[in-house]
Image (cartoon, rainbow, N blue to C red; front, top):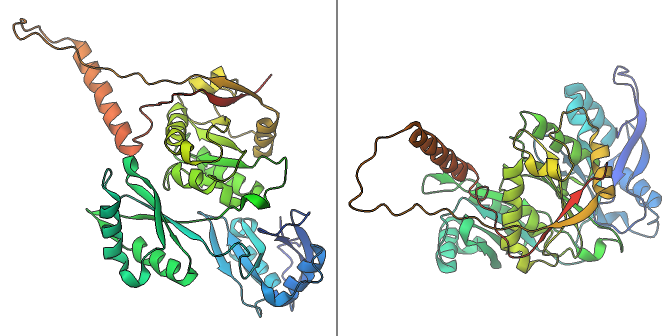
Length: 392
């Protein structure tokens, strides 16, 4: 945990907080900084810079953010006169879970790579032209908050990405779109993190994690919470919030990375189909995919020796180690399309049997599946796809 004090000791006036470097190119993954009741955020910044080996840097060029991983990822920039230790103690009194899910991040006020804020917008009608999508968004935003650029557009899914070079304008657009509805549906709006490829050390393979929180009862929700604590929370994506496309967009410029999919066979097919659709625009078109099987219907996970299903007793850290140690193999994937046989016009009517009911049930199941996850019912690819097989 970030803090090192006894929660029952209300008089404890000092301890340690853990500070993470964000995008800064430093050797340490985090530093533990001693604090007390009177330590301010400005004091915390100064001590953190020293511990990260950035003694010559000016405190005024940095900011400290409070990242809460509970129920998604929320960020709040702290003012210089706030007291980090008091914040931690108050969180501990209100909710031990929230205290465990909070992190402090050290960040530059000005991104050296220039401002480039991306918004993912979903729940738009599929199959429209770019001009129509621009017109819809401009109606909600107004010309004063119009985006700098649009694209990529995922026509099949009714989703797209818009980018801004002005942070204030991006925030106003985010708030406006989040409160907007089109054709009786609320727009889905996500502020996407920006991964700078030059910040990834040589020889390192980042991990992109997708979790279907609806799979396996509460197991998906438990896993996403654990992975967001073990990893950078911005590399862990909830498939119930925009599907695989936001995460694949964020990682589009990473040349070599892996994917971990937590869900059933349908979830894996959903991720792979989206990967097919965006792979040609990505630096890494076929990243290897590992599996944490959740729920039922885990035939692919069984074949690849990831087991029949996550029981909840496994240590999430060991799951990540398995991804590192797993053997990479290649599998062919293809599409199977069923067409109904043409019925002769003069064919005599046949009495119905129970099989008709079964067919209807299957058809209804497919339609429901397509409604909730339109990409899970078909897995298409013209090239082999890399997977991990865990050797036992």
